[in-house]
Each structure stands twice: as C-alpha cells, then as structure tokens.
Length: 206
Image (cartoon, rainbow, N blue to C red):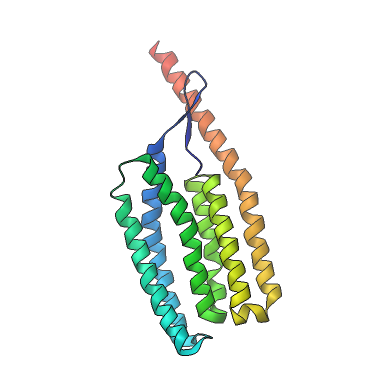
C-alpha cells in the first residue's frame, strides 16, 4: 500500500496514517453504496436473462450474492474497529484483491449481461489509486486482470467473443497505467503545496 506522505519543514517525508485510515473508511462506505446496486442488478439480470449454467448457476449466484453482502458489511464493521495503522494496511490490501475477485464471480455467472459489469473493474482500480495510492492500485489491477482472465477462460459467452474480451482486457491494462502517472503528479503537487503552506505558517509565526 502506498502511504500518504507529508513534507516537514526540514524537507523530510513523514507518514500520516490518519489519512490512510480515513480513506479506508470512505471506501468501505462507497463499497456498500455502490455494491448493493451491483448486487441487485446481478440478481435481476440472472432472474431475467438466466445463467449459462442452468440450475447450478442459480445456486452459485445465490452463494455469490450472500458472500457479497457479508463482505460489504464485514469490511464496514471492521473499519469501525480500527485501532492500529497495520489494520488499515491489511484492509487496503485485502479489499484491493477481494473487490475485483467478487466482481469476476458476477461476470462469470451473468453470461452476456456481465459485459455491463466490466466498467466496475476500472471504477475499483482507479478508486484505490486516487484514494489510497498507486501501490494499492497496482495490487487491485493485478487482481482485476487475473479475475477477468479467468472469466475469459471459464465463461462460455466470453469464449465465443474473444476479441471483445481481449479489447476490454487491454483497457484494464492501459488506463490504470496512464492514470498512475496522473496520480503521482497530483500527489507530488499536493505534498509541495502542503510543504509551502507549512513553511509560510512558520515564517509568519517567527
């Protein structure tokens, strides 16, 4: 996980874990706010369009839906119990892996309508990048690419349309890499602005 860096007046970098913990709390709330519509949409899509796996597919969807709901509420509960910076770091890494893997489960079971879920990979990856840092974003990107690659191999509809799947896979590779540079520039500019603000405050105090 990439730590939030602040500059001291001596020019040394220090870590403010409060910002990281705040980001984890915000992401937990966003996960519930966005996750429930995704969960409901997945259930409606399977109910209306069906699943390519027949009766076993409906059972699998039920299991995924229950795990998804438990996951959202458990992460929201855990952030209220955070007492140590190590807990925040563990939550960032764990959720950066589990978020896209749960999404991959939905893509596998929803068949053709699963294409509508692909955009949430980018939503999740970039969310980690802008809120937590580039390192968390890279972990989430690796998990997303792994999960989506499994979907392309397992799901019949994606095997029938390999070009569409590969084009979306390419988007998941290229867009976060481009965003990584933007995030670095934004964080560097933010650190410089805070350093200059602290320097001015100390100058006025003297």
